[in-house]
Image 1 (spheres, rainbow, N blue to C red):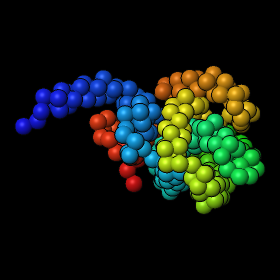
Image 2 (spheres, rainbow, N blue to C red):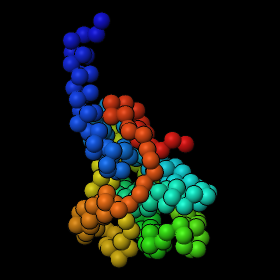
Image 3 (tube, helix red, strand yellow):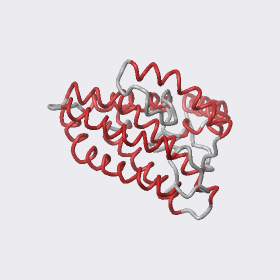
Image 4 (cartoon, rainbow, N blue to C red):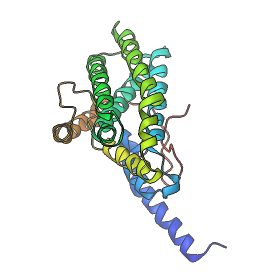
Length: 245
């Protein structure tokens, strides 16, 4: 038989899931490794920062291929919107959390951070153009393909070189704490590209906090996203809420 404390924990978790269910169904962001869940994970369950970033990269690749390869305009639009949402949040969270860590902890980290910010700026400008388009537009797929070509170059350099250097400079605890900060930050970043905004703290933080609520309200009211199963609020494993592949 289950102990009284276990039964009480299960009831509390069930109640929490019921409370969060309407939020999870309406807010696309909360199905993507939400910050509240990061806080609830044990230290051994939290990803290193490089693993968290690579998981975002996998998600972006998945959305891209679904948007480009689908023959259904509605599905194309939903996955294209998901790609915009994820890339906008991911890019700004990197600039606010990860690139300062390059500058602080990695030899030649300033040049690495500046290089990555320059790559981000090009990608943001392309994303800004893409987010204006619909699948019915002839430029929809070619614009996304051009954007993704630059993104792939950035991802390759980041995963094979920059993140390796960062992890080598961090302890496991420091890496996991940085991962937590990265995931929490994504909850407060804009969900659309704003290429004219600053890309360094503190000004990027201020602009992001002002812009994010407007972006998210528009997405809540007017943007179509992929149909997703309700995330299992009580499932304490990495990748909860990630799209099925």
